[in-house]
Length: 270
Image 1 (cartoon, rainbow, N blue to C red):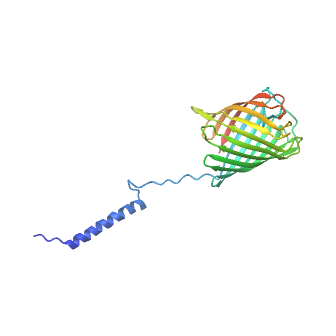
Image 2: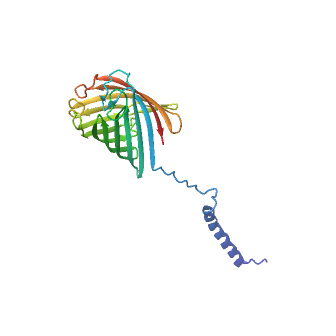
Image 3: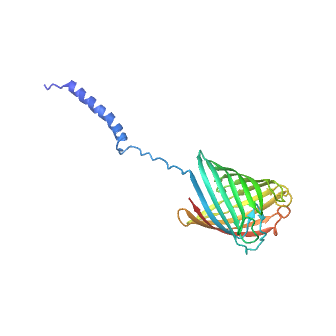
C-alpha cells in the first residue's frame, strides 16, 4: 500500500491558498488584470474661462428702452463688443467680470472716438444642479454720467424645455433724470437643434417702478425673439437673431411702442 505524505500535502495546500490570495492584490497593485476596474480621474476645471464677442446691432435696447430712438428703422449700425472672464471658486461658485461697449457715430462721444458707453459688471454665479443664481454690481458709464446697477437672476435649465428665469434689475444711484428703482423680468427660452444649428426662442415680460424709464409704474414690455447659432470651430461660433418688442408707452418712453431689432454675433470662448 502506498503511503501518502499528509504533512507535505498540507504544506502544498497552504502555499496554493496563499498564492491565490496574493495574486489578485499583486494584479491591482501592478498591471491591471482582465477583471480589474479602471478608475479615470475627472478632468480638472480651469480656474479662468471666458468669452469675447462682437455684435452688430440695429438697435440698442436697455430693458425695453430704445436708447437711440431707432424705432422701426434698421439704418443705424451699432457695434457692441463684450468680454467676460469667469473664475472658478469651487463648489459651484464662480466670480465674474465683464465689460460691454456701445460704439457708433450717432452722437459726439464723451468717452472718445465713437465709444458712447462702457459698462463694467462684477459679481457671482452659483450653480446648484440645474439652477443658476447670479448677483452682481454694474457701473454703466455714458454721456459723462455713471449709472449704478444691482442685478439678480435665477434661471433653471429644463422644466419641459422652457428654461425659465426671473431677473431683478435695480438702479441704485445715478446722475441722470430718471429715478432709481426696479425692473422685474420673467422669461423663458425654449430651444431646439436642427443639424449643427442651435435655435432659441427667448420670451420675456417686465414691470417697472415709477419713472424708471421716463413713465409711470406698471407693465413695461413683452418681447419675443428667435436666435440661431452655429459653431465654426471648437471655440468659435456665429449667431444671428431678431426680436420683436411691444412696449407700454405710458411706462417706457420710446418713439414707437412696437419695433423689431436684428443682430449678428461672432463669439470666441476660451
